[in-house]
Length: 280
Ligand code: DGL
Image (cartoon, rainbow, N blue to C red):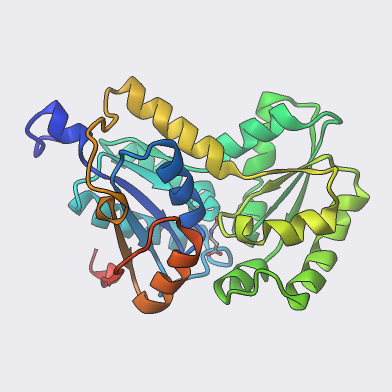
């Protein structure tokens, strides 16, 4: 913080957003919508995706490297737009930082607990997120009577990264993964991986229209906005339009990422830069 000269300059600093790949773009998209004056530096760890099948130690090391890179870019706050990193690394990294960092799990758990009517919530996510039981822990802290049914869906991330958002293969895998949830009578389902909103329609079709899907991205962006307001760090300056406000970095395959990002975001991305994250 010392490096920043004054409050206005600090408020104008970007927000760092990171994920293992393209999934965090679903959170970045929501931040762009809710607080459009903010600048964003996005990092997608495309060289090391997926995170969901790796250990807590590895994910914490990766997340620390990314946070160091983002701090070098002088961000004023960081969003871990990845459930796996939020579940595994957030608590530890938060203690080491002098800027705010928020994850996607707490906001998602909160909105799901508010949404359910029958007290049965499903959570789908990576093996890491589901294995950590972080959603059920947070939900039961809010209301211990809510029953949480968790299901890891490890093939969803590669399907999304391959662009198979609407495909018979994805339909088939969704049917296999999600039957345990529909059988247990949930009325609310948390998309506990930031890649999953991209296959939202497949998931909704599979679980049925009566199940409310919770995308933690919306609530995360709202929490970020509230935090920046409280700290007087909202960027009120009207800056250049669209793309000028956003910068994208990846650890591999920048062109593939750019094409992908352009199909998710409203603003066209002109470039994504590859960096060597192992240097951080
Ligand atoms: N999108 C991430 C998450 O929310 C990570 C998926 C992965 O890399 O396995 O967990």
